[in-house]
Image (cartoon, rainbow, N blue to C red; front, side, top):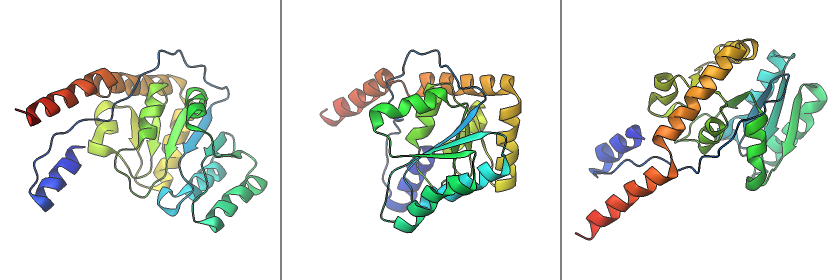
Length: 208
């Protein structure tokens, strides 16, 4: 991100080249589940803040919330997540899903939620946008990309996140527009072929 590039220079006086994450973009016409599903994907760790997603499910009981995530060293947190569906019937925990199967979840979901306390550039955002899925993030919006490209919402607070998710759930036209914006941003900035060419230029300059 431009932010990382700036911090690298400020702290270490290193000039760097910004190259976005490269993605092989699937050719798809996603079939979204009806009624809409809200998805969370990540490791079950404190920094990912998964319990906030359960709170979100409790606050919006009329929607289905699906969490995908593998174990970490925090066994107590993982156990809490395992027990959560008993208290929150609209919350489902799928556990670990292999990488080659995870795109099925992004394809079917209508909204992707990120509750992380801090991140760099989440690859899950790119996976969501590849399948025309809007992103609602609690804290993370690298380089203000979602705001600039209107491909999601960075809520900054839990009440605002509830409102943002509700707005997308209730407005299918908005979901479609925001999801399409995400896909168009991905095609414009993260296409693996364009990114590979940027690497080629860097490597060629190294040997000159």
